[in-house]
Figure (cartoon, helix red, strand yellow):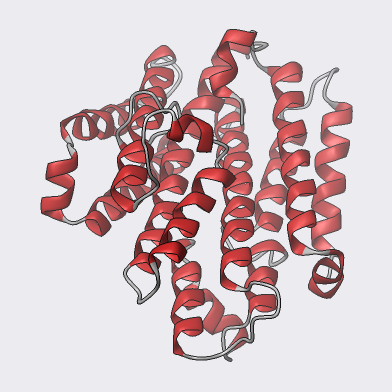
Length: 322
């Protein structure tokens, strides 16, 4: 497969997945902001979201204060934010358009119609229809795109690069959600328990479509350690880090070339460490440090995949960095 074709397929999938994951991050923050809490706590929550996405400085260049309306506008609609939902869906569409001869007509129509609908959205329309309904729409369009991909694409290298992009992006997002929310929900010295604690952990699980999964697996009270275990180490949880890395590793092996041996080894090592890891060891090490190290490994894999298979990125194209 041509590197440029693989590049477009990979980034098409990453941007569609990124739009969904940003919607999930914003949704859990929005739900928590509706709970009784001080203005300082609300600002800390939205500020943490900006920091974990690495866009806090860019936000402050355009907005004087951190608040729900400003963050939602910046993360959903802003043309100045390369990772806004609007820009992610636009870039997914542009990459799909570049390989219309490779993707199926159903996948192209799904991606194109998603962008056309997003282009018509405004902050006013979103507020009229409900912010939560907008987030559900973004997630639904991503689900639809993924289903059409699996249901219509030939099981060849094209599909493999789409899957690599999807799961590498999902792994990155899962880690960011865990890090920002785990720190906010369980500050040092805080005692677990209580209705507020339960509802906030429930909101976190719902943000990754894992509430019902948690109940089925653990059948017990929601605890921070089990939430972290589910989202990191449970390979049977679709959005867990372990599941994502299993998919990345298996698909990398299927498209291996003479340059990719070290990339496969690093992906396989990370997959094996997650498969045999224990949450007690991770908590003892410190979840924040663990997440930072894992994010660095995901970033390294993204760079290595670009060098091994895709069109090398020039400095001006760093907006596509994972």
